[in-house]
Length: 291
Image (cartoon, rainbow, N blue to C red; front, side, top):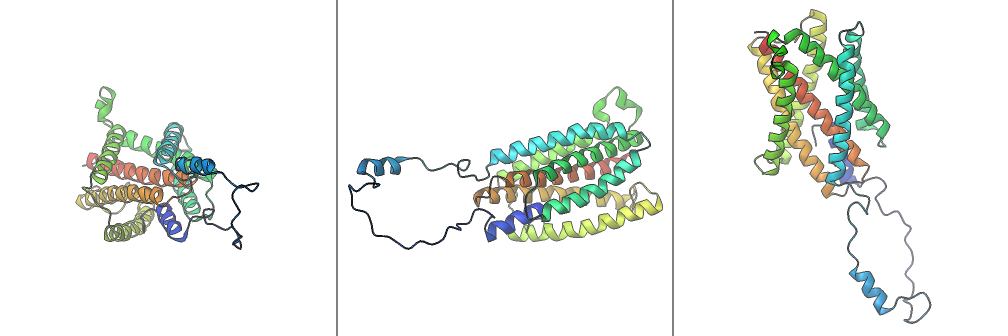
């Protein structure tokens, strides 16, 4: 079972048989073999030519490939970045608060619909990327205004958002390298542990959001103290381990011959985890700068 509900769905369908890829043709009664030379039969040369034809590629067979997933991921990631600029511009306006709270609610609802919808809806996945981009841009602007110091004007790499982006990409690259080299092995036990931890943290995150809104505190439980920093470090580690599970789930989907349309779902799931990692790193940097 994958930590991300999107990948969990794909693995479940891989075990049951992907919709549309089962042989549903009616069974036909065998007929007598035709005699060679009769109309409609193949010659020896035709049979040899048919035998010599190369096997159909995954693309020709309508199966998902790594290239599909990479291109879809880059496309959705570009949408997130473009609309993050929109969210960044809206954050300082009176709409800023509504954008952030609305973004949390919409991404939660859309994410659940995408994960559990029986059919894959590309418009919904694209809409999610747009909403997520606006939300990420707005909350990034908030962190930039609150936690940046004057030196950010002369050195943009000292800005909290730039540091969070660099850290996120570095963790992503590191986890991909560790997974591909076998340094991190995703076993059934590993998946179960990460899954249970993610479920527990998701419940905690909802409780913490309510607590933060009620108490009007920036980070909720733990604040900027040692407990809060520990929570952020745990969340970053958990998001990082989830990336490894996501990589393995993509490999499994390709190996089991998932339909090509599933590349959208795989790309969406990877973006969800990547944005989660970025937000957790942003929170940790905010806590550290509040010391």
